[in-house]
Length: 312
Image (cartoon, rainbow, N blue to C red):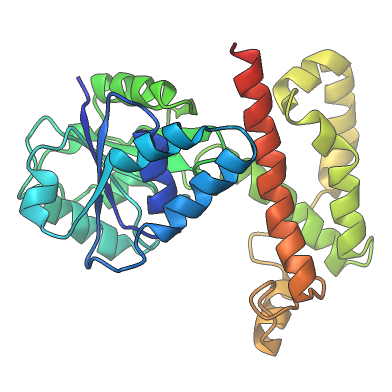
């Protein structure tokens, strides 16, 4: 039975994931960090306060969640009683490999080890581990406390019981886990997302539409369908024959480049990094950036509210 959770790395995703696990009243959560900063609670409190303000949580529930999280800097103390450890480190293969090899010096042999990598193969990440069968990928989507999806990725080594326990654990915390049966780069959702991005970038690069038009075409068209109907269900709806005929005509015209868009390289060379610099595919004022980020959070909170009401 999973009781003690350790989240390694108290950054953006680590704080959110710790909050997710602490929402389950039967779990104790340790946030493993290199140093105890005076403002370490601030990101978690901000997340929770936004949910309290919108009625997703009560103040009492917020305090209970915080009460189930503690910070720890010592490896031996953090890992020795853990049942489930998930890392939220930067996307650097060697760093992740060394982290898990070190964790195995302190944790029990039956503790599940999970990586929150978004695209890297867990098989490679866990290649230096002693007990690879207890290792699994768990890709939370940012913001981790608001997006339900978590991709549970089987490595070449993962034992079946690890998949079962991980899926059950995530479900108990209110997440929507999906099982990626094969360890392929990008897993499921990122492969779908970046296939769309490749086509979007190609259309801008080739003068078919400007960036805002591409975004509007997604937001006010198929994007409205996606929360309730995925591509497989949509294909069944319109019919397999029509799907075949469309692909028979259209696929040869779609982007199939295996290198990043030339537009991306040009922007990088010019020092245009998107929100970070105020210019990327489009120009962004401080107010526009704030409105975009907050708009996403508000949309996701509205979704959480609808889910809460439907469960009553």
